[in-house]
Image 1 (cartoon, one colour):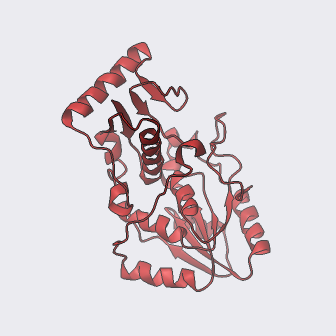
Image 2: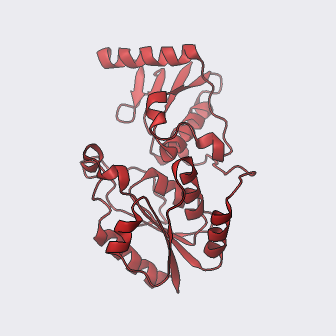
Amino acid sequence: MKLVSFTAGLGNQLFQYCFYRYLLNKFPNEKIYGYYNKKWLKKHGGIIIEHFFDVKLPRSTRWINLYGQYLRIIYKCFSCGVSKDDDFEMNRTMFVGYWQDQCFFSGINISYKKNLVISEKNTWLLGEILKCNSVAIHFRRGDYMLPQFKKIFGEVCTVKYYLKSIRKVEEKISEPVFFVFSDDIDWVKQNFTFNKVYFVDWNKGQNSFWDMYLMSQCSANIIANSTFSFWGAYLNKNNPFVIYPQKWVRTNLKQPNIFPKTWMAL
């Protein structure tokens, strides 16, 4: 028996689901359950991956969750039983991490649910995206500006990074139209000017999924150092031109092995 922990927001849940599928392939005769950290998930709107994607999450029970809590306590005391990103061992019982590596998700098919109900406003925007050389550009600030996150993720995607990315897109794509997705549109308007632009700021809470969906429909993507942003580009089936930040975090952590070779680092 093995347990996979699911936690954090939609982007990380997608990585964790891929890792679960990876384990299913590695251990076809073993039961693999889900451990759902309700306290941490609640901060990000809960488990929302199954609302929008064609996935089958691992089942869980009250006993499984209690067992997961027990294993985490044992790990804190004796460093055994639990495998983490920076301490990965296949033969352990519980897996707690984000599993941001192509070896875990390449070959795993992730697709949207076929019966998704899109709002009138998002339907209108999708029409605008599909009729031009659309460029999704994602600015993530919000929680990245909080002290505990800023020291890790903040100020990686600087104004300079976005200006260089915009110039590169304008060199590559004829008459680009920018679609700005951000949790701080006012900051974007104060720091950048675009010839043709749409600002997208109405998809809130669980509906923020629609930002990811709309980004994945564009002709090109400029992403932030965010797993949400990454999936918006990775799920794009239009053979997009994608730019990502050369540095993912401010700390000495190495760049995650998640970027396709066809993408451009700046």
